[in-house]
Length: 297
Image (cartoon, rainbow, N blue to C red):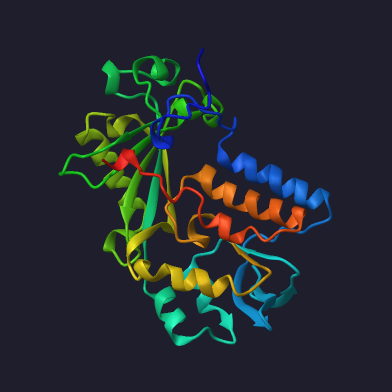
């Protein structure tokens, strides 16, 4: 019997999995709606500037809103999925110098996706959106050729056909692993799109003439790196554990290269602990600590 769980298969390499019809963002749209239905408020385009604390508790945060105003938001329980570098950098009063040094020394890799809409691919002998899954069954393809900069290509049609408005079209994501300090990150969108078109052709995947449209999406701090001051991360963990109502969760909130499912699980475990009247924060820091990422080998 085919098992959707595939418990003995590496998460990065499983061939069958559940996936939201309109992509992962659909999950968070539902979460936001449920929060609002329960009387909560979801603030978009806002940034936490300061994290106020006293007596071993977080009292609230200063939030800069979309219109540039700053507002203090109190909180009984505070969940942080922001990069640890930003969290500790916004501490008020400031964290001890040794803790601040570890936080500021953490290193990240940044990420650029170039979404490319095409009439067809030359890959697989030439195919449009209707026949893509039959000829090219992969959801993503890692690129190892040294003469291109793209590191991975997502085939969004194969994730879910509902991600593409016109099922005859092909919707790709060319992914570039970069640093914010790189000249490439600073390039304008037109230049990056031009490179993506050139590299698609160089890889034999598509021709520039088949490109209908494209978009560039920059994601800073997409990947927490395991160098810099990462070896001293336990100092951060021990420090934040001293604030009884602070819950660090998620990939950046814990500076851990977890898959999305494990990142979500850290929040679920934390919330379960609150519901049970237990402090399960130490348990959240143990989620997926023994996993290897075979996709990188």
